[in-house]
Length: 120
Image 1 (cartoon, helix red, strand yellow):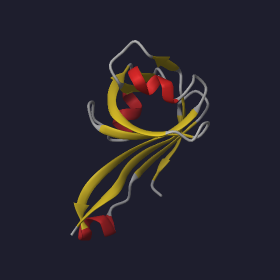
Image 2: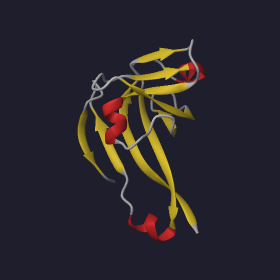
Image 3: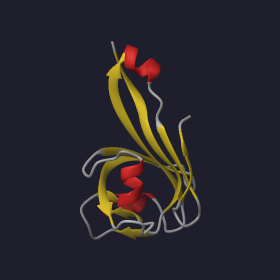
Image 4: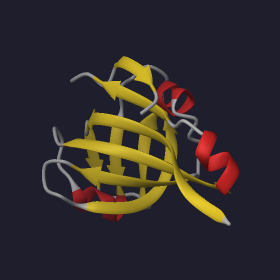
């Protein structure tokens, strides 16, 4: 049996930009992507704490240590600058691996800097 498990979570990111005139995606600070083990082009789920929206898109790498979290294209309609979001990545793994796996969780401050990194 295979299970779809939480691989990583960027918790409480603040949307810094929304760019409707772009292909759909979310741009995330490259250092946050590295810390959360999210690759450019990887499918992510975004959960907006401010309006309840949940959607999937793909991650694009932003500048290192810029704090950028930008909704692009149609995703720009799913949130506003200042909204808090969680960005989730998932992995398919065997039942055995799923029972041992611990996802990476990054808790961010109001400037999208990591204040805590760990697992669930």
